[in-house]
Length: 381
Image 1 (cartoon, rainbow, N blue to C red):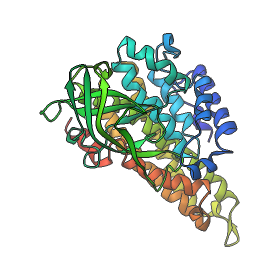
Image 2 (cartoon, rainbow, N blue to C red; image 1 turned 90 degrees about the horizontal axis):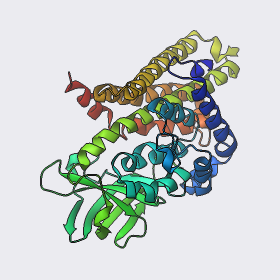
Image 3 (tube, one colour; image 1 turned 180 degrees about the vertical axis):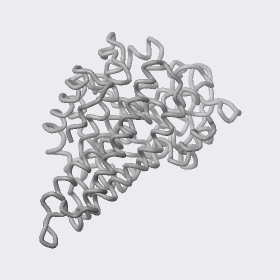
Image 4 (cartoon, rainbow, N blue to C red; image 1 turned 180 degrees about the horizontal axis):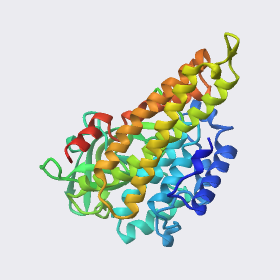
């Protein structure tokens, strides 16, 4: 749909980035990603190619290899990436760029950034963030993982759950309680291979099949005191701050799924014959597609407004929570309808519409469930 490239917030440079990402997906992802669904992860060489193309450090400092771009540029990247029909590939990348490594960018010391950011930007070091637990997902402050200081070390104990990139990441940014107060937690850098740190199990999911998702176990994991990320006791606020970046990225993923599904469905109904005519000749089909496209376009403009507001330094927790709730529900409405219009073929594995339908479901859950997001909105009135 041509309206994807029409936006008052974007520049010719943004559209060049969009085209670059589109070419990468067409060349390096769509022909091969069905095999990644079976393997349960995105090959590291593909991620290194993205890093080499300059796509992993858009918002990071140039001294580490980044582009020092703004939130609008980052949104263009996330939206372009989300035109892929493989949600597992998309989330593997977005967790690395928008959900995990930003903790290092925002809170890391000069020494920590110098040690890790160049590898993160090149795609040599893939990152994950350990926040959710078996008993604490959206309720971040309810986590039970602890870290206690012993001399020149921190000792971490606990379990994390539903961690995207959890199996194959190289560096993990882990939240743990460092005091008795409900919000007293800190962030830590934990490298793969640290004694006591293990992947408990790789989790089998309904969707995002090419994304590796894991349970992480910390059994007296000792890390240097210098691996504290940011200020002790301020981890909760770091997590909350980064949720804004994360939720805009997830909104972009949802909008990407909507636009791709509508494109696929429009093409299908114009060709599919039933009862002596195409499905497009049925008024109810035309009208439902038109309304879903209208909703998608409206949500997309709100999403870009949110990213623009970030560039202006505005506090937009309420608006981003609205965006996450809106797009998480909209993508499921769009995909349910688009799958319906594909008939039996929409229920066949390995078709793009069936895959998008499965992958869309979690967007109303992960990164802040719809109900939690609406409560964040309501308490700010």
